[in-house]
Length: 231
DNA sequence: GCGACAG
DNA sequence: ATCTTGTCGC
Figure 1 (cartoon, rainbow, N blue to C red):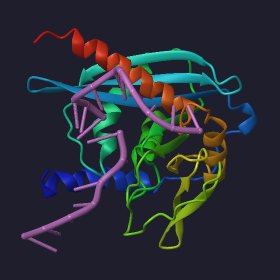
Figure 2: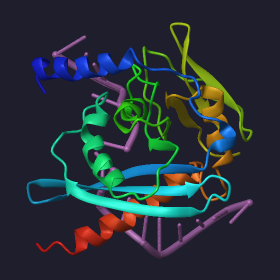
Figure 3: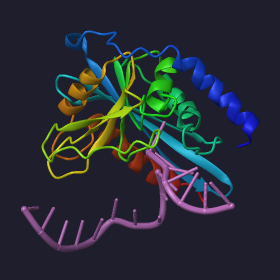
C-alpha cells in the first residue's frame, strides 16, 4: 500500500472518528438479539477467499436464533490498523442474508482501542448502523502504552489509558485464562460493554459465546468449502 | 534503518 | 488470519 492510498483510507477513518459516541443508544432491558461476527480465510491458487459467519443469539436465553454465512473473494490485504477494509465487504453481504435484526454486534478485534479509535468494531457501527463491541484476543498496542495485567479473578480488569483517555480494557473473563482486550465499538459505553461481555462468557471459552459460536461456525464452513474446491 | 503489527 | 484437531490436565 503506498502513501497515497493509505491517506485515503485514513481520511475515511478520520471522517467516521468525529462521529463516535460512547453512550448507550439503547435500553439494556430491551436488548433482545445480540450477534457475533467472525471470518476465516483460505487461499486457492492465487485467489484469497473468506467466509463470514454471523450467529444471532437471544440475549436472555443465550441460544442461537439465526445463523448465516457468506463466502466470497477477499481482495483487500491485511494491513494492521485497517482491518475493517478487509473484512467489512464480506460482513455486509452476510448481514444481507439475515432475517432477524440484531440490536448489537460483537466483533473479533478492536473498536476504540486503536490509534485512531477506528478498529473494526467502531468502523463497522457506521456501516451497519448498530451499536458494536470489540473483543480482541491479543493486544494491539496504541501509543506505546502497554496494558497492565489484571488480577487473576473473574471479571477483573485494567483500563488501557492513552493520553488520559480510556481506550479499552484488559478484561479477565475467567480465572486462569489470558485476558481479552475489550473496547467499545460505538453507541455504547465501556461499562455496559463490559457487563454484556461478561454476561455472555460461559465455561467453554474466555470469549463471549457470540464470538465463540461465530468462530466455530467459521472453522466448519472453511473446512467444507476448502475441501470441496478441487485442486 | 529496525521492529512491531487486531485479523 | 493460517500451517494443526489429538492430547494432556483439571
